[in-house]
Image 1 (cartoon, rainbow, N blue to C red):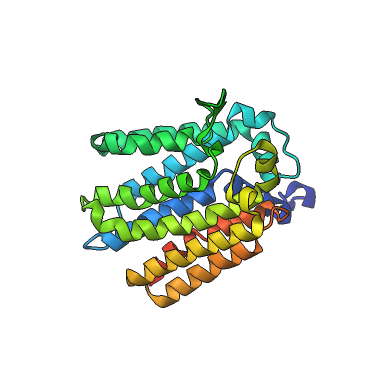
Image 2 (image 1 turned 120 degrees about the vertical axis):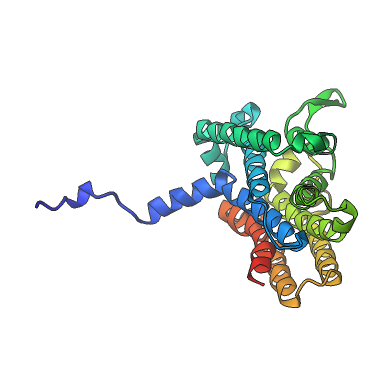
Amino acid sequence: MVSPSPSAVPAIGPGLFRRALDAVLYSSSWLAAAAAAQTAATFRNWSATGDVNLRVVALVLAATLLVYNLDAVLPFKHRQPAGTSGRKAWQQQHRRALAVLAGTSAVLAGYLFLADGWWRYLPGLLPLAALALLYSWPLARWRGQRRALREVPLLKIFLIAGVWSAVTVGVPTLALQRPLAQAVGLLAQRFCLVLALAIVFDIRDLSRDRAAGTRTFPVVLGPARAKAVALAFLAGAMALGFERGVPPLELLITGLSAASVIIWADERRSDYFFALLADGVLLVPAVLYFLN
């Protein structure tokens, strides 16, 4: 038997690992996994038996992939220069693959939405879907120009936190047919945590938002004061968690992880800092809950 030459054996090394990491991070798969994990944790928190409805988790996963990848393939975004952003360059290079992923996610989300009877909640879910889709699409006319909701001064992070917490808390609460009033504490806690981390991404986009005239907290207040605002919202999330009886160790690990990302945030940091670590903080409380 003749052994294959070294050149015939596929190389498995740092290059392959980095390509795989880029695909997971920049296709929003890592972020969608965080949304799915938080949804599953909500089921464990509210279900009398502790069971997780995997079909709802899959719906949230597919919907998150759809929204973020649809945003990534917007035509006007691919006319913008990538600059030093590895994330944007990767998305421009893999635009067709992202479009296929968005289409596949739309089919899966649509099937689960119809098959599981979510159309009954359409009046409540439609505003969430509209906010998620209009976040980047410049469809509304404001001051003589078509603008997206993300361009409304200081509104962007509240939209992100509101939609994220409503989906990962509100959707499983509806599936369990529990009164939404019972989920207010968890909803507020998750809203504050996501809000704090959303400011981190505004720090990443500081120069671009300033050039575009988009008034975010870092643009208006400067990075240092914006970090102070983020830490205040994080403190609120921790206080709400303590009030809800979340184990102190879980709060401590989540709080330290989020605070570290907020303090070290800088627009000059690599895309991996934001896509891997900042988004990864969203996974921390959900993973800790399942380990508890």
